[in-house]
Length: 438
Ligand SMILES: O=C(O)C1=C[C@@H](OP(=O)(O)O)[C@@H](O)[C@H](O)C1
Ligand SMILES: C=C(OP(=O)(O)O)C(=O)O
View 1: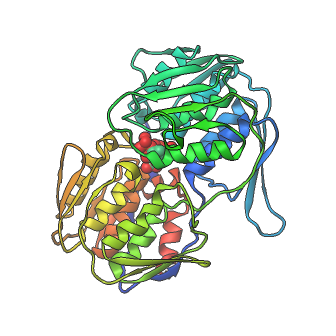
View 2: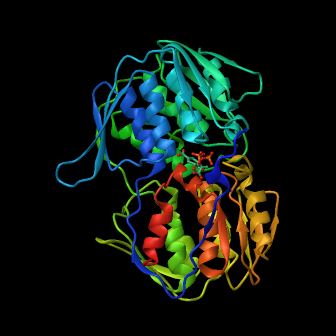
C-alpha cells in the first residue's frame, strides 16, 4: 500500500492572538446538494442546482449519477450568481460502477436508485465504507423486489441488479444506526411502482432533521409524503408513486460546516457573520444558535446573515445531540475549553460514522492533556488546561475541524491530514486562515 503524503502531512493549526472578527461565506450544504442531485436525476424534466457544494462527497454523487446515465452540466452564472449544475434526467442504464468514497449519502441513497437502473450497478468505496451500516437499505430493497448481491455482511461492496423498475410497497427497517436508511428509501420512493411505506421498528431513530429535510425536498418537487408529523402513524413514512418536477434550487450554506467559525467567535470572545443563514431550514446546524448560546455566545439573525458573538466566557453543557449528531465533534472541542464540565448524550451511533467519533475525540483531546471519558451513548468532558501536540483525524473531516478549534485556543496543535476536510469543505484551511486575517 502506498502512503499518501497528504495523509501524514501536519498542518500547524493557527493560534488566535485576539478576538476574531470576520465574515465567512460558508459553501453549500452537503446534505441538501446530494439530495437535490438524486431528486433531479429521478425527475421527469431537467432541474438546476445553484451554489451546489463541490466537495468529495458531492462530486462522488454526481459521478455516480453520470455513470448511471444522468447528464450533469456544470457552469458559472453570467451574473456572478455563482456556480450551477444542470441535471438532465435520462433513462437510467447500467452496467455502472459507483465509488461511494466514505460518503454516507452516496452509499445509502444510491442503491435504491440503482434498483431502477436497467442493468447491474456495482458499489465500492473506501475501506471504512465496508464497516458502515447498510443492512437497512440492502434488506429493504430485497423486500421491495430488488436483487442485491453482497458478501452476506449487509455492507459494501455490493451489486444491485437493476431491472428498470421496482415494485416497492411496505417495508419494516431498523434505522437506529442511521437515519439515512429512511431517507434513502423515501427519496426513490415516488419512482417505485407502488411507492413505499417505511416503518422504523428499532430503538431511537437519530438525525430526525435530516429525515425532515428529505420529506421537505420531496414535497417541494411534487411528491406526496405522509409522515408521523402530518398525522400519520408514529415511525411510518409513506410516499405515493408519481412524477417528480424539475426544480431551480439555490443550495443553503452548510450550517454544520459553519460550526468551526461560530466556535472561533465563541472561544475567542469575537464576532463572526455567516451570510445567507436561512431563516427557516431543516439543517441540524441551525441548532447551533441555541447550543452555542447556552455555551456563552449570543446571536442575531438579520438580513445580512447570522451574527454570532462570543462573550469571552465558555460554559459546559448537558445536551442530547441525537438529532444533530454531526455537530458532536465541534461541540466536544468547545466543551474541552469551557469553564465547567459537559455531558454529550444520545450519539452512540457516531461510533459508526466516518470513524468511531467517540473513541477518536476521547483519545485526541486526552492526548492534548484533556479529560474526556466515553459513556454508553456519548462523552463526559471535564475541561483542564491543554497543551500542544499532534491531533490525528482518522480521515474524518469533522475531527480535523474540531482540532482546528482547539488549536485556536491552545498553542502548538498540529492537525494530521487537514486535507480530509475535502469530504465536505475543501476550502477549510483557506477559510480558516482568512477568518484570522492571515
Ligand atoms: O442524511 C444526511 O444527509 C445525513 C444524516 C445523518 O446521518 P446519520 O443518521 O447516519 O447520523 C448525518 O449524521 C450525516 O452527516 C448526514
Ligand atoms: C456523518 C457524516 O457524514 P455521512 O454523510 O458520510 O454519514 C458527517 O458529515 O458528519
